[in-house]
Image 1 (cartoon, rainbow, N blue to C red):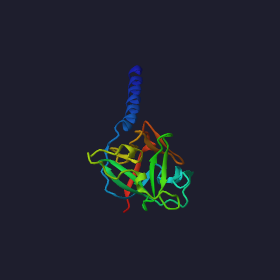
Image 2 (cartoon, helix red, strand yellow):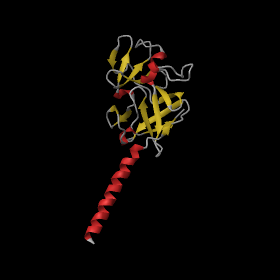
Image 3 (spheres, one colour):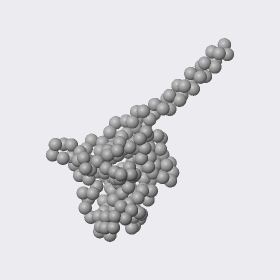
Image 4 (cartoon, rainbow, N blue to C red):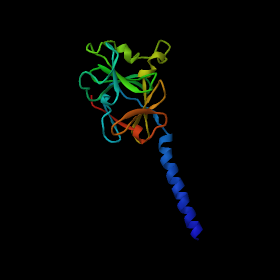
Length: 187
């Protein structure tokens, strides 16, 4: 009888561990978000903000912090089903992934920084064949809605997920709980 009880406990532990792993195996379906401004927060309730990533300024190609404080929220622009470009609300900054280092960065699009062309942030629609522009993949992010209602943000260039802990942001191949975000429309 004691072996039977121990076996049940072992089986329950295996089922519990398996169910925890299942949560991240199902990544969800591509999200259909309307163009607009959204709050994007991690599981700790912290805003996704560019203070945690390096910002590129075109005039000097310096990498560092923005010249001025970054606006709250993100202007999400749909490129294709589930694929978006993430701008700051004033469209003077956008997220991208550096091809060489696979790090999340942002372009500062202002006359002060020397980056005035929004084309740095990629084509905002598919090409004439209906395909995504291959040279824009570093600025395209697929947003996937998890069955629990939260979202993953995945870069189209390197297929890595944005992971934001309490104080850092990075890209990972296998999503964890720290890759889940709440995305709430504000405008």
